[in-house]
Amino acid sequence: MKIAIGADHAGFELKELVSQFIRETGHELIDMGTGSSCAVDYPDYAEAVAKAVSDGKVERGILICGTGIGMSIVANKFKNIRAALCNDLFTAKMSRLHNDANILCMGARVIGKGLALEIVKTWLDTPFEGERHLRRIEKINTIERKVLDK
Image (cartoon, rainbow, N blue to C red):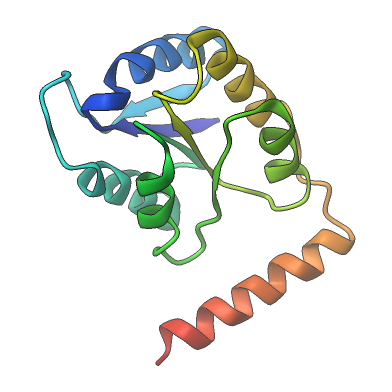
């Protein structure tokens, strides 16, 4: 799978760890920054990753900031994006199983490194269940089209 990853300064250290893990699992990774722990603005990195997923250049994205909240807000502004803030294994699993989330957002100041890697593994390994959930995703898409067409 082709995955884009991005983080702000608060998420930089965790991004580096997650990036290594993803590469070790055999996925192709595109690192969209930041490249250090120097202060930056999270919307810039959320935009880059969300645009890559929205445009189909990558299949999924991962965004990390201090809480994950800002990244998820920005990412969900893009067409065809279902970004989920997951700081536990249950939400990581359900975001894929029921919501077909294509961007995982995490808070580096909220979760530890070990849990973060478990969340990433769960999120990458869980397929979309489809069936009744597909109908709900289609409703989300319909709402999105109505809102964007205004």
